[in-house]
Length: 212
Ligand SMILES: CC(C)(COP(=O)(O)OP(=O)(O)OC[C@H]1O[C@@H](n2cnc3c(N)ncnc32)[C@H](O)[C@@H]1OP(=O)(O)O)[C@@H](O)C(=O)NCCC(=O)NCCS
Image 1: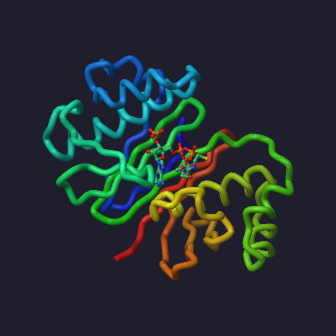
Image 2 (image 1 turned 135 degrees about the vertical axis):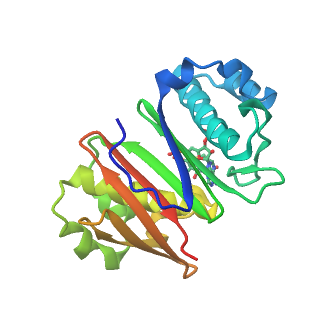
């Protein structure tokens, strides 16, 4: 189950269990290009998460645009970010574990999702900018929760900018308000982001929205 994530009014959001998405008529939903990409994947888990991600995003866009999911003109930009041809919409999707999530908005957005798992504690300091360390180490969370909270919040912003992990997570700096499940993030080009996040014992999820 996805932990409860606040979704602003300006964003349409959907989450699915991979198993539910794979019970749909996904062969009739995915485009020929997506079916080719799926076939070229040599890992069954990757095939499943890719398929579920496209099913959940296409069904969300289909409801928004009044089209059949298979008719949604989804394209992959050079950066890897998805877009909807001829529509002024920002799209983002993520998959991890048994879940896939998708978000669409007229505002710039990015979402990320990760299964919380044990990692070397040095990884947390590796992704933090110097000025974030004291704040993050002071949060009442264990190291793995802090790591995946920081990771998903930063990656949601990097996905919204379209660079993804071509840019270092250290280039965005986050301040967390755990009571409001909201992070304020500043990226290195001086843009400000509001990132809604949710943590459970199994998943960390984040949705970055550029105010304005
Ligand atoms: C985007 C990126 C952060 C995704 O990380 P991830 O944790 O593996 O996967 P997530 O579940 O969070 O997101 C996957 C989705 O992000 C989207 N995506 C891919 N590149 C993106 C980009 N540059 N910006 C925004 N979104 C992107 C895709 O829709 C992808 O879904 P798909 O598998 O259905 O195509 C990562 O792949 C990346 O940084 N890519 C750009 C750099 C690159 O191409 N590196 C080569 C591989 S290391």
